[in-house]
Length: 469
Image 1 (cartoon, rainbow, N blue to C red):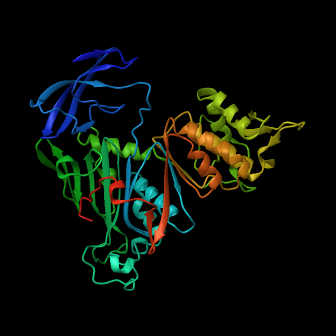
Image 2: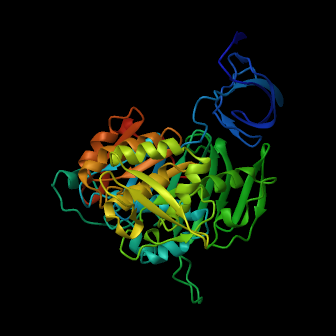
Image 3: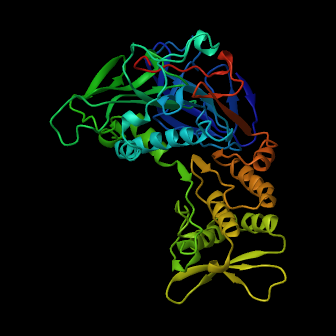
């Protein structure tokens, strides 16, 4: 091995347990020194615990059940795990879509191309870990109304206009499939129509299949937890262990099987998904709670409607990056500053000081655009960054001159957390594309189905549905 000083990296000693020919599990870790040793063994991601699983990282001579290796973890990099692939099948305008992702993702395209459908599909994925996916589908009109409405397959002759676009006998089972993966874990869920019954809830969709695997895409050898109907099994060494044979069709395995001692993969992934943050409904109307004084407590995470804006800003002042907040306000409104007023009854409110004015503006006096920008600043400068933050049309109500400042704010946030921006504001998109972290995804619609513009077969990440979709 070669000794290297990598500036603050740690040399880690660990034991790996062989699960199969190419799958190992860390069973113990200990930090030994601040000097790093790099050999030809495994180099893993920036964040790891005793439950992280490695695939295709071991050299062939690791043939023992327990082996010792060195792991190098750069402290200077963002240690948050990142989604690298999103896959959607049979959802509204999306027949089949596999999208590669980066630290900053900008989803663009003309109206009606399916931007909102990708956003809603990601929210459905998030609901699987919150216990709300069935309710969310019901609120969308039921599972049947969310299925892809086109033919099961669009043939080449249909694309050339030689024959009309029309359906035929179905060859596969109708399923809505959603999935994502990163470098460490992947997850997919398949939802279908219920079996006929006399229940009053006979129209509720059912979860037919769920799977967690190690690595960026599913392979049978990398599968860790598999749910098929009511049965859930997890890998235990070289064998499978049945966890239950009686899982309800309306429950996700995140709801019932999440013991960190028995199934650390389920627990880890559930907490990862629950950490995702969505902002798409900031209220800025005249009766919006953000315009009124509200009871203030420490608020490291802004509510999704912005009701606790004053408390969130004060939290940034005290435990976050107060200087960045001042710079963000000044960047958008030169000469302006933002303060939080604390009232005797424990309520907090915001005051906006603008150059040339003799008094501060209260929340009720702010324009919709000014208030929305302040809300976005509080969300993006959170002292507790999420693993994933999704902004749906953040440009709403903002004057075009504010969009470059908003882009700089988003780019700052993407250095600490993975960010998605769904937008059709050309000025915002252009400014975001200047970031080296930006991954632009332009959508188009062909024959009614959403596609990534210019994506060829070789541009798609590897992806396989567990149930063969």
